[in-house]
Image 1: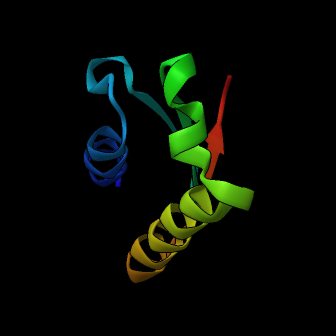
Image 2: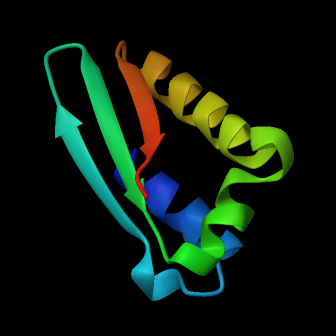
Length: 76
């Protein structure tokens, strides 16, 4: 899951080397913390949160296939 988010977000940003994903895994839930360059925050979040909402939906589907739940948070 972490690699998928890394791939998608890196493709959206102008500074792909600054994209960091920290994954905290529990028994039934995974929390993914996304950090990126300040200039890329607008691209990652999108207008009215549409871009990050779409990525969160994909992460939820990917986690559901594994019988888990996942949360994607953007950390500034």
